[in-house]
Length: 337
Image (cartoon, rainbow, N blue to C red):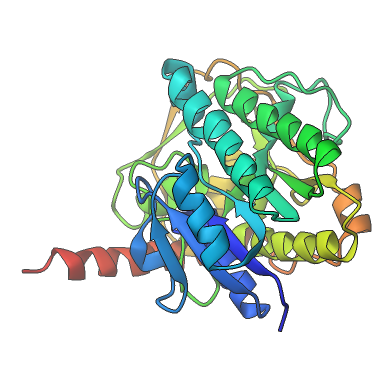
């Protein structure tokens, strides 16, 4: 069994809960810190040490690091809705940047040698070409992307001054759910396309809005690189193993499949998997949405012992749909008197 104990912040949330399962499956001992503002206690296995609290609570962080003998942090906690970051920027700089500062500070004080950070393709802003490589320009166009990039900078500078190495994974569009049905995306009011489409397929919504049909893409709708959350979680475990094996090395990598699908292609896949025609409503494009966001993944494939195993759009949709149906039954059970 791996000797490193891992603290997962935001481990009751969508991506964090999948990372917890991947770590457990790999033999790591895990502790979770989550304030449950968007996460769910039920997403954390009972055998996992769970702390409800804020990542900016220095005393609590010191307690967890000492009690659990933490050797690595995986940081998923934070705010992630781009339009909200524009209307409430201070919330994002507080939750994402100030919160990360407190967490990194506690990790340094507690002698934690490894830190993995959940970043985003939003750090690139509107790229001038696609696929996007890691060394491309970082010009975020919203507070969400800026708050994440600031944390990347903090980790770079801290690793230069203290005995800590770090890994940054810049996600593109995360979708799907645990193939075994143990967890999935449960957040109400989600904005991710595949989640929204699966809600429409199961009757939670009456349509899906297509924002923009005039992009410079084959069918006029925006193209995105969708990665299955199961593969994304596996990438975190592979990254941790590499950081442990090479303590003098830090890594920043894109995490995607290097293949993009348009909005209409995704909706066609949902129709195909469900055998239901989802109603589509066309709307103007949203400000700041680029034509295409596709990851250049040469670095992660060359660096980590990681290969995607669920990199098929229909598979991603099928797993997301299975979770949506399971979630509907769970919600009905919890709502029963």
